[in-house]
Each structure stands twice: as structure tokens, then as C-alpha cells.
Length: 89
Picture 1: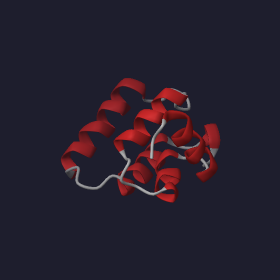
Picture 2: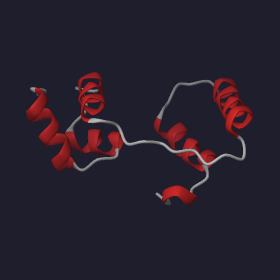
Picture 3: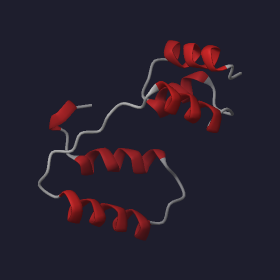
Picture 4: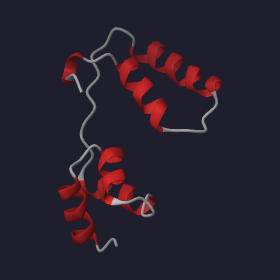
């Protein structure tokens, strides 16, 4: 990704491609809400903490390591480490 220079709406378009099943009208409402509340602002998006990543691993346990890596934006090795540390199979 382009770091701090990337437009949030470009990022949201990528997220939209990854998340299937949400109606177009809902995406439009989300984008308008973001624009109203944060238009013109620089937004900081912190990386998920270990506990949050472990929760996401549990919620998506049916995915393989490669899919989890792509979904969470971390390396396959990091997925394996988190699974091992959290007792996730």
C-alpha cells in the first residue's frame, strides 16, 4: 500500500472487493459517513494488536494460512506464529 499518502476511498474500494455480500447502498452510506466526519483530515489507522489478530484468526479459522495472511495483511509466518501462540489449529 501507499502508506500515509493513500486515499482512504482507494483503500475502501480494495476492502469492498475483499468483502462480498454487503449491499451497494450500505457501502455508499459508509463512505458518506466517513466523508462527513473526517473529510479533509489525515486518518491514522493503527495496526491490529496481537489479541485482535488472534480474535480474527479464530473468527476465520476455516481459512488456510495463505488466505489468512492476505486477509489480515501479515506474513504467512506471522499467521503460523499467532496460531501456535494462541492455540489455534
